[in-house]
Image (cartoon, rainbow, N blue to C red; front, top):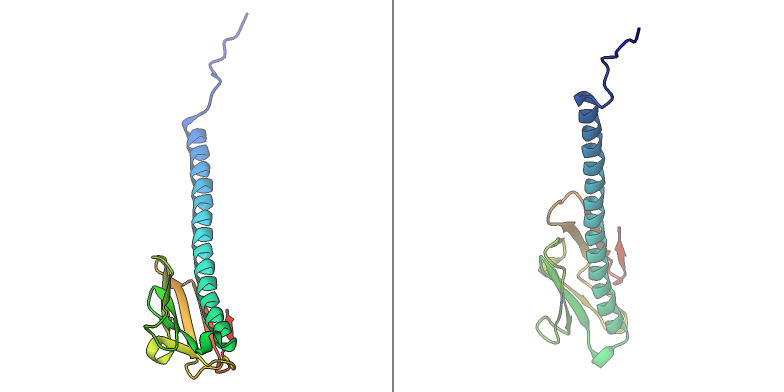
Length: 150
């Protein structure tokens, strides 16, 4: 006598649902990680670009290029390198739509003195993402003209 089995091979609905739920969880975690990484990269790149403009202005002032002082004017989404006073010899550096700049510096300008590189307009600049102000970097400009980012 042969006995017929009523069990069929295959997956149940619950097994398939669990696998799909795990896949959705893994994909969403990976996607969020890449998105966060991209935001951090944008913030790092924008911060380094802003810092390099300040260092360039101080370097040109210390070398007395064209026998001039050099400075940087700070806007919400750009920094402008200028010679002697804002409006002369301007070079604008746009930070793009992803970065916001805010500052404690009076007049939003830092003017570096020729030869010494010192400035009377010291303070901080906070650089944050437009999409998330919780991620930010701070550039500190000291009276000596030295800059530091953290």
